[in-house]
Image (cartoon, rainbow, N blue to C red; front, side, top):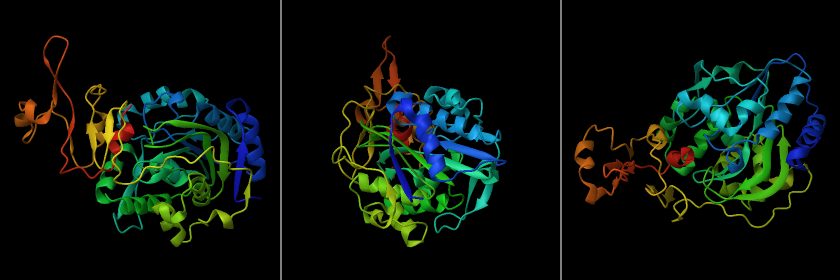
Length: 367
């Protein structure tokens, strides 16, 4: 049995590819309660390549149904908890779940072996299951550089709890370590990475897609992520999550030491974000330099960025509050006012840069 399996496939052939990987890893789910966790970051259309492919999710659910009917599909997206159902519909995950989707409503507090926070809230379903299947999407990440198996497990935390963790560990290295801490609460039993496309550049939601046509699977998420990093031409030392996990003995982080079946064959050298790089997203809502800036011409004022900001740096100028009333009237200084169709002011969120920790939560939820 390999440590990591790479399968060349297409959306139409996913059912047979899933059958094959279940056989390779000798997956037996008879009599087990199974939780399937896709990447459901936010309300993005499936073709954007931000969230797990509905076709892959449906193929996995159908395969699991052969062994057990005790199946839950779910995730905690970065959007507000009240919008989880809407996110599931928009991403195609609700329909692909074949009636197995659930909005998690029973978080429980668990102790965390972490130097950053003593405990976290986790959706109880992840702790109560017998078998956890992790379905991340292969993407770069503006903060952690790579998002795959390990980062996808950050979704065991209900949406409202994530911003506080960003604030508790604001730096690249500290947050990467905290992500590994959370992953250790309930490591998945099987990881199937949706690599039909790879998002490069400013992932996890704003980068362009590169066709790749593969599933990348394994029982150890750290080891699968090490292969993903190698495809991005990154060494373990260049991905702090892998560096931390390797030091803790959570998996082999050198791809050369793993038994890998299949051909990686990167399409070309892919662009990976560098921390602090001044990178412009001219056709997107956010200009992500060292800190984000709202691009008003693209903003639809949905306020998701305001809702998820962990420090309050993303300010809602309509809401008022301490000092905000003065800012509302100072259009020349802040550039937060535009003109609506009837000549009335239009107000946009704006980043208070001194309070911004460059966690890019705002960019993650921006659609």
